[in-house]
Image (cartoon, rainbow, N blue to C red):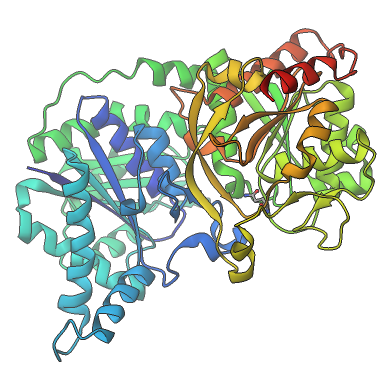
Length: 556
Ligand code: GLN
């Protein structure tokens, strides 16, 4: 029998419900259970793919190519699962589905209502994930805050699940804020009491409460919450803001949340193996000599827009037993002040994905700085494209080389739309999304990093490396180290005569896990550690391109 754990939020948004849910998933997985997760997002957008990074942060891409909420990234990383479109359902999707059915006459003239049509559709998605994943436990997080108008059908749907599958198979956790009052120096529980009241007015009586706070939640505060919210004393947990999200599973574990869940849901409460998570927590505490990586992008003031990139860098650090410190650098600031000035402290630079021309020249300058100074460089999607543009401009001497996205009139569109993909641009909004295979060429850094010939990686972009320039670029030392199996697309490019200058058209960051750093990030950070150890920059081998040409020729 599948067990369902529902996570709701109270008082304010941005409490880290996703991290809490992901941490609970990790604790159950570490006890040998299989876990899947569903994020219910009550907003009316069909998916976050069209939302601005200012509104939404990163768009997380699943293997099957759905553009989803960034919480799915937390779930995948913490629980080490691969999720699909089944794991993110928005009100926009539910209403589109229902209105589509209404238009095609499926409801046979009936009146269509929130209850039962909308709630049944929501429950249908929960059930579908339970069936297809066959997981022991399904975690369902309801986005937003209790009291939001658009959230009501979702709360009603999860309320009904208890009646459908039984009390013994359902558990409701409410994550709320405990504000700290400076004048009396105490955490206040009243907003939580009100929020629980609001939840109860919807028919949901929470089984457990997690109180989020900026301070330690003492036992007397927990007792008070238990009393006023009618929750068992052993079912109130505190979660102060920790300095690393990777400490959250351990923090909740110590308070015995897993035992409470096992009790209520009759799950095996075996000894969890969390040794690696303890190791990670130690690295996160290590303030000595961090590996300083500069991430150069357009939205660097919004760290959430590059969430998976930051996490993947941390994971690579965990692998090497080193703490990675990220210096967020605006590419527009590079345009104003110069790369030498802003990147001087970095032992590695990473240019992440992005859209549109703003700040791109600063990213190109970043690529040039890394190439000329032997600083390890990892380019992701747009970051790979700017690396190709920079190489074409500086090494091939094609001064106006650019991406068609950034300059529609360029004579040298080294990043372009490939034959057969033109309609992607005409129709707009359509991208190459999801997982595609990539063949790694022998003798390259990419191949060495992965250690296998064929890999699958996730994409989210419209433009591609232009094959018309491939021979020219390869002969000049920019090797296509990863290609589509039929050789039609370049998926990874690397500068042959450089300690580590690799760009991927795909987004490796989505596949990285704390316990399994992604090979490209792992090797990038290894190269950065080497720079750090040697106290400066690498000696650049003579860039005559001869070795690169040899690789290219052996494959031709
Ligand atoms: N804007 C580029 C493209 O569409 C890169 C996209 C990205 O970095 N995700 O191809």
